[in-house]
Length: 389
Ligand SMILES: [Zn+2]
Image 1: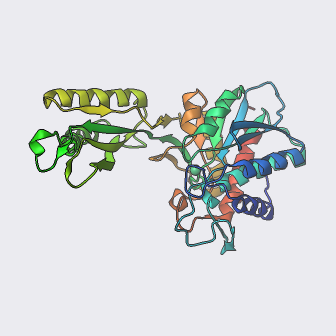
Image 2: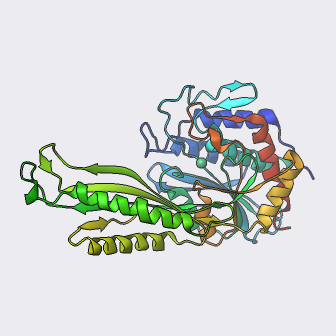
Image 3: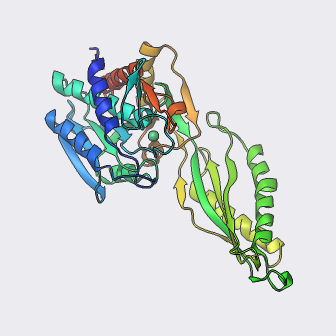
């Protein structure tokens, strides 16, 4: 059986989704995802499918639509796509216009990741409207908060369903992404003693102390990471100093200086362990520089690397269906994080897959090629048709 998705139907769906603002509340101009969730819930209800609504935070619900399978007690196939987007500042197009030109649809979230959500909704609709049952149940989780804290996907894991595998919608150009890096971000603070800058010898300069910390990070730690074994799909781990703040006035010896670091982990590294190692290394540095007062704060962002076996059933099915439509399908690793690593860490084999290119995500004129959205829906539909058979 072929899954044939009507292009006009997908276009309408994607336009609806883009026209509902869902900038993550963590960004300027953000709003809770409630209106998007309402739309998705009504969509499932209209199809006669059960929809579970879970308030992850006030006014920020996940919606999980449930398509029954032939073996309805079997672990389900999970389709997951986030509803939130990044900010719209400095965009050169109407972020919520959903304008179509030359086969492309423009707007914030058009490719990241409302195109994937539209493709998944269209696939679910095809099954419901044609009265076709997939071998195992399929759940579509439309989630909140991927762009900031991953609260939505973490709540999906709390919902008590049993998942055999997951397809996580992100713009991959219809290729399969099986590996990505994790990340640890934390603040490192040096604490000195303030004094009048006319008598600097009476104080301890926290900025000067921080220079030793930064020199160690850039001179020793970065070089060591570059020499370490690289992962075949995502490369080497990295470490960067990304922000710095220190001092209160031009005539005061600074008592505090704070940097933020961004450490990207690769499969095989444990992000929590990596943070503990950074803390230990800074304690060592302090001991070697008698009297240096360095505090490594707990991570304010922590995510895990992902490494799904390319031989797992879900990866194979998505790839073979995609190959039938776009020719050569690549198995990729990517440097950015997604919801998939949280699912994978919970033991659910997960593949990241969807229409559009990551090059267009978060950009000032974000767009997606409509043809890809249709193909994406058909590939997801064909995977639903065969998974667990
Ligand atoms: Zn995304």
